[in-house]
Image 1: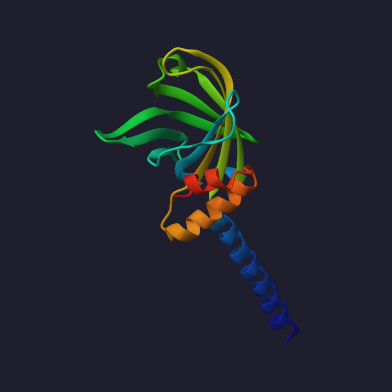
Image 2: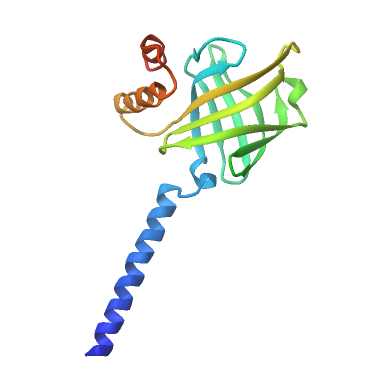
Length: 180
């Protein structure tokens, strides 16, 4: 009887530990797992301008589990890839190694971005922009707020986005504009 109780106890511990491990994988316990997926940029702030700017919908970042990424946007003429390459994640640094870009000055270079993940649906990226896509010197920091694209209720998603934006912004009108 003691042997049966012992094995039953060990079995239950193993079962619950296994369930916990499985749940951690499903939840994307590590940042490397959590960044995989499709993201849409919601707002951008340039250090030489006041406040966040609302970004029209249709600008996306796809991060693949094989170490590749691609940014693309939807236009009236169709979708275009704006930048692609590979990436690696080192702590709070998300490093993009750019292969192709509409900003030709980026091609063949590393683009280090500070990354912060909040909840399961928001990613903040901060990076330095020496030159823009037109070759104009900028020498400014760019902050981007990205929201994960998923199958979900749009109104619930916008409530979550409003809550995230309230942590960064004081202007309720800007928050309303971003979450239209």
